[in-house]
Figure 1 (cartoon, rainbow, N blue to C red):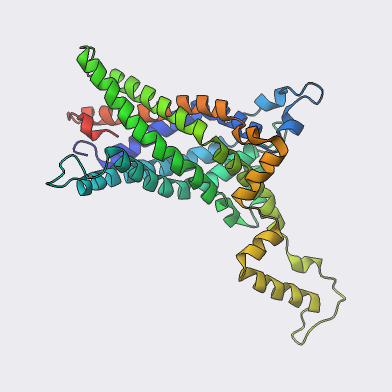
Figure 2: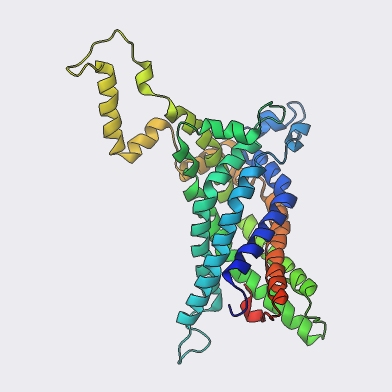
Length: 353
């Protein structure tokens, strides 16, 4: 990018992240509750089956963790995306093919996918904390985020348990969204140029970006809803798994049992041996702890709710993604234009996402 520095990217990404988190977070909370396995028990009326007021209470629970993690994750995403896109574009262009060997959509999809992998590594713990905090009863005397964090105290690594699921949802989402977003933005600008409607203002640029990003995001969000439902189930189960795994098996050994030559109880020694064997067999460990694969969780959802269970919350996710993506990329691009203008520089269309 010729006119925007790395600091511009980070600052613009931070502005965009704050804007989205504050405005659309309530919709994300409601979506999480709808997708949870306890939705019918906690958030619907037993007689009518309709949503009860609890569904709409405490909709900002867990936002603190997201705000803290979103800033570095969004900065990492945009920095990686911008630099990777520039590199891929240069490698894709040759003297024989000045327009590129691969379609530009492939360049955008590849760059956004790599950026998403980096971003997910930072965002996963906050996402796990957020989704579990969103499910805490709004009448609880303890802060929902602190209450959730306490559950992971004995096993902090469980906070990264949803990384694969998060990346599995976000990779296809960004791979679909960004090529559609880039193409739609170009088409709208060309249309306005032909009609003589272009003004070249930050306001116009923000609106075009917001509409293009929102539309592309909504389509990608609805398509990837089944993966999002499975991801929600995995992250909600992570807290219970962490609490279960944090319990010491030695604590269950009776003090008056037999001891071995080293003074340890025989039962404790057996437990340690079994643990060592399980550590060499991840599959056995997973089964012992009751952890399930994404495929197994998907099968259980279909068995419980039918195929439509995999699309639970899809419409709401499409709506809040339209709003969120529009605000996110609209604020990001506008922030880049504003920061460059403050230095007296002009940003060309080719410099944008």
